[in-house]
Image 1 (cartoon, helix red, strand yellow):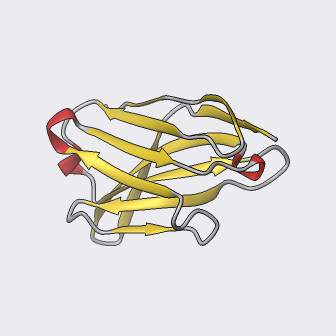
Image 2 (tube, one colour):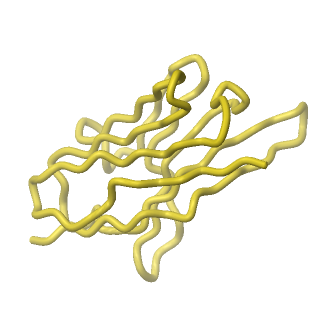
Amino acid sequence: QVQLVESGGGLVQAGGSLRLSCAASGSIFRFNAMAWYRQAPGKQRELVATITTGGSSTYADSVKGRFTISSDNAKNTVYLQMNSLKPEDTAVYYCNARRSWGPITYDYWGQGTQVTVSS
């Protein structure tokens, strides 16, 4: 059973920073990739950043240069450092872990953590 537990959300003023954490139950090497998604009220869930087990990372254009995804394999934890936050970054942020076996893919999700950026 895989559990992902997010933490680190909160209320911050525009221009501020937050660091989100996603702690996995067990080794994150089990997963092909881990990612952060977010969902704002009335909007679809969107991919924010991804990191593979090899350490490669990708970002949504809206957060490039401001957000950094990283992992600590010893702690089975993935982080999202968010700098220069904007009100439009306000959303519930979800941790995702993906495992693939050939053509089969399975996604695991955390419960989400709220990030609110005030103007």
